Image 1 (cartoon, rainbow, N blue to C red):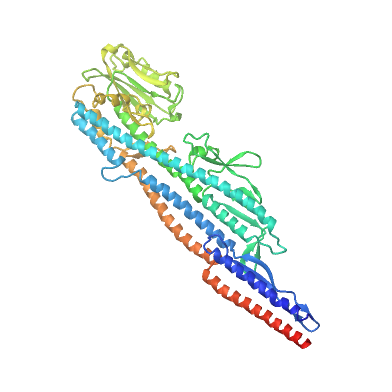
Image 2 (spheres, one colour):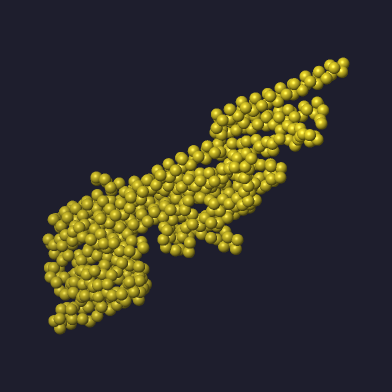
Length: 610
């Protein structure tokens, strides 16, 4: 049995224990507005008693550890909800900006410019020889072109802006990942499972970095051997045996080691970054098609291009790139359809763009929109009389050499046994692999014989830009032909080269009502009117923006609910802590009272002795 002096130790342990409790409450209150600070509690137990023959005498209070209230499951849900919210916030922000580039309201936008462009052709068909109408048509054409090219340029600039955000986000992921690896080392050095030593504040800081990485790029964290602490709270779980953090299925943090992500835009013409990971075999692995969470996932979902995908596989390109491709398809459809009709306007010769094929390449595999069918090259004199025609047939094996063979063949086009009035007698068709330009030229220019290319479904003149009205092949390089930019009065409204003929202008203004073929970036063909196809691609932007907004609002509601759940489980409640402060202060005072009482007892004993 201990003496009266040893009895002082029992309330002393209670005094010191309650001081630790008060200090812990003070620390909790000090960090009440720290989002990632986990409320801490003091874990205590009775000291080992002093055993006597008939009883065990308690020896006071033992402070085992200070532990944080951290529910790993709730925290994981909170991270996931935040990552999803950030994904749709970023996605909606990008789509909302893109949708503003299609302001299809009265007197504004591409759709309105289309109407004015076709009306200009209509006006020219009424006054075919009026130079002022030709100048007006050139101006309306240029306005339409400028709006199309400007819209594409703004989409590309939005891509590039988001690409810089991607770069900043990945650099921040690397910084945070490196800090987590350092924290893992510090936690391992400080903590002791046997002694119940816990690095609470270091773990809170690591949780914050985890949360931020997850918000930026999405991450899977694995804590093997995680142990609970039921005496304080069944949800407390620390002391993991191994910590790994994966991004896109690849480990970037393994305990105290860190493997950074890398950025590469060397091969991308627009400077868009590909995110890569260096594997253990020292080969780079492309992560750009694997990342679909957080801010980075949303940005990639907006800007990803085909050359950013693993192994260059098709599919999975970003929404903005789809919009750019759609605009290119729209512009290409206008260019080729217009040029195919405009090639009917008779000229003294014909020539194409510089082509990307050799004379032996089959048209069907050349990448050009050439269809099976036929076209006629019709000859007119300067009075508009038809002198004959040469029909050219295109099938799935046709190449430029076979076109030349058909045009230059010695054929009696007029069936009159006259060896000097057929197409091959008056014109020659040429194409070489050196100049890569298809041309039809007169053998005797002084005859002033005109030719008109009248298509029957092949799109030959439209695809190859023969005697074109528009230059280019997409929304990026679409232009009014140089000769009409320099002198709009050269625009031709006629098919036969005679005054008062406005057949081509009539066909052009009718084109707004006709269905034409648009080929999208995947090679699918769509039969639509020009304005109808534009409404289709503009509607896609609008519908995806609205759908994303709806999902964003849903994710926002889920995020708010889960955040409240997380705060209730882990964050500090000042009201609760003030109640605890009163309790612990009372306990401290009670233990002090016991010490005072024992002190009086000692004085009594000393008085008896005296």
